[in-house]
Image 1: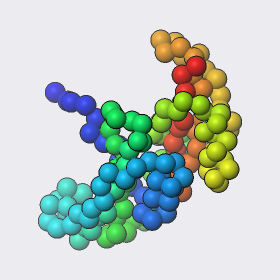
Image 2: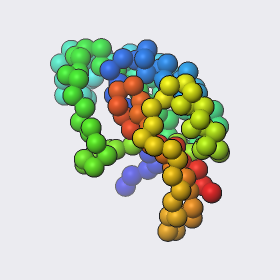
Image 3: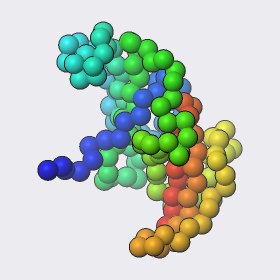
Image 4: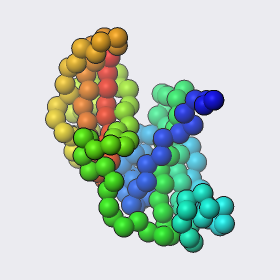
Length: 150
């Protein structure tokens, strides 16, 4: 019935701030930047008077897998509420990125001001082997993860 995941969407409060984070700090490449508006956008989102800026990004090393889709509702503006303020709440809780060297990536991102939950942690994941993982936040408080197979 379903095919592969097409993209992973994250609604952001400020696209310029989000791009500074995802493009400039995390190093993702912009694939496309467009504005969506009109009756179809209103119907799709179940909102009225929608003007939506959408930016697609992907790691230059990730030739496969879905791109990240950043959505900024220019109109109507969001109410500032975060639907998933804690990892323990139901819903999409994180977007994870594979890295080659988690310790180096962690150090570089901390030096760029990225806020982490903790240092990288080692796990023995049954069926997957050993991995190191660490959670961090984007500017809107969305949880992201770095993960490295060991």
